[in-house]
Amino acid sequence: MSARKPPAPVRMNDPDPDLPDLVRAAGLALGLMKAAKADSWADLAAAIDAGEKAACALEVTVAQARLLDAHADVVALLRPKPMVTVAVCPACGAWSLYSSGAVSARCTLTRGCEGKQVKAKVAVRAKKPAADGTN
Ligand SMILES: [Zn+2]
Image (cartoon, rainbow, N blue to C red; front, side):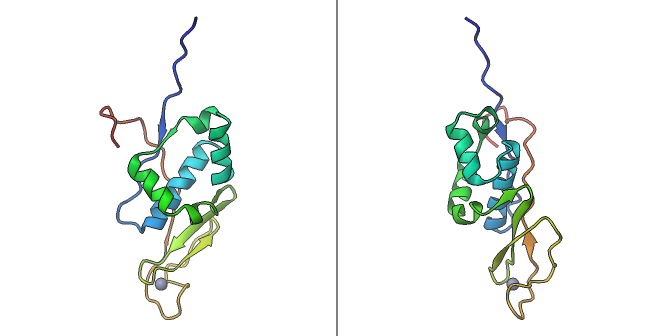
């Protein structure tokens, strides 16, 4: 009997805590979808159900899972390729879906808003899990 090692867990770096929560959730979701080569969040869930290796190797922290849950409605709309991401204006709280192109720095979501839109970037894969099991 050969004991095969389970695949190494794949984690995403925690998104910048200063970013709006929706931007953090979106970046994280895109990073996870990309790592599993999933086309959407639903596709990723299906890959996990089907036991696909790349999808099953993904690990999220409790905080990351809560963040994703809290924004599940928007996360469901995101696509890694071609990219569908979000930008949020922290000043007025409005958000919109965007492609991979540049987003206007000034808020275009609310008339007269002086805020600057923040676009979600794909989360970076963590180098390796921390030795103590935390992120
Ligand atoms: Zn705004």
